[in-house]
Length: 258
Ligand SMILES: Cc1cc2nc3c(=O)[nH]c(=O)nc-3n(C[C@H](O)[C@H](O)[C@H](O)COP(=O)(O)OP(=O)(O)OC[C@H]3O[C@@H](n4cnc5c(N)ncnc54)[C@H](O)[C@@H]3O)c2cc1C
Image 1 (spheres, rainbow, N blue to C red):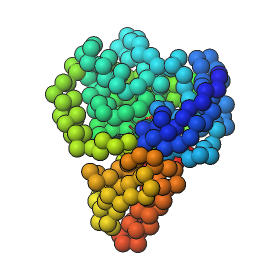
Image 2 (image 1 turned 90 degrees about the vertical axis):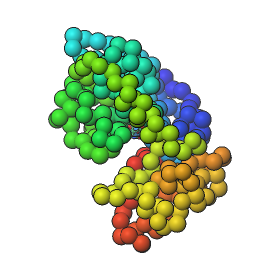
Image 3 (image 1 turned 90 degrees about the horizontal axis):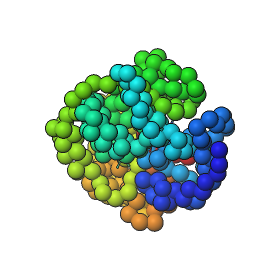
Image 4 (image 1 turned 135 degrees about the horizontal axis):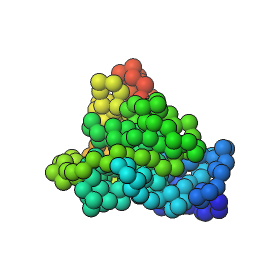
């Protein structure tokens, strides 16, 4: 284990935060229980005073094949997983295209696009040193109860990388905001869309300091330059308040506020 200073205004996808000392976990370490584990910070909004943080080092960024299974380290970036699947003609990972992050973050968030989500193809996960079958882990739309630290995961190898599906999914993404964001700020309430609700209460394009509800996709909180945690928090609270008042719907954050 070693400490590394990470500047979240550069490292996080939404470019908000300050330099923070993060404990890096190496291969044979016993990670502490009192630190919050982060991945590649694509789904995080980090305050100037976050809880103590830790992160898996590159020791956990690997892909191995064992018989009919692919074993992937939790620190492996999704982009490298797609490249591997393409190169070795493996099916199932196409939806990870343009879904930034690490495998660990994907599993913890049950990340996905449309009907594709990581739990559909996941065989098992090593959590706090124990292999657990995917079906034994409580999970649903953008959540999974891992109750610990995922270090690697197993997928049954299915041949046949689908380049056409990859193309379709990449095209689907082309209308997403290009400004720094952490993806969707809120989960879609059942039977509705958070973006529609935010737009309906008149917040589309609304700014506070350097942060704004995107003009392109209202559920994306974007950093137009120099946005702070306070600006972001203000806009999140404003959207929750307005949507509750008008629609009696409690919006639930998808992004993790630390
Ligand atoms: C432009 C953009 C578009 C996006 N589009 C989508 C989308 O279409 N669909 C979607 O689902 N998401 C989307 N996201 C969100 C993001 O891509 C996913 O949530 C991704 O899986 C986050 O991975 P990460 O490594 O960055 O995790 P982080 O953001 O660092 O962490 C997210 C959560 O995962 C937990 N975690 C991370 N690693 C581990 C681990 N090893 N063990 C246990 N818990 C862990 C953290 O504690 C935290 O709660 C988008 C983000 C951006 C910036």
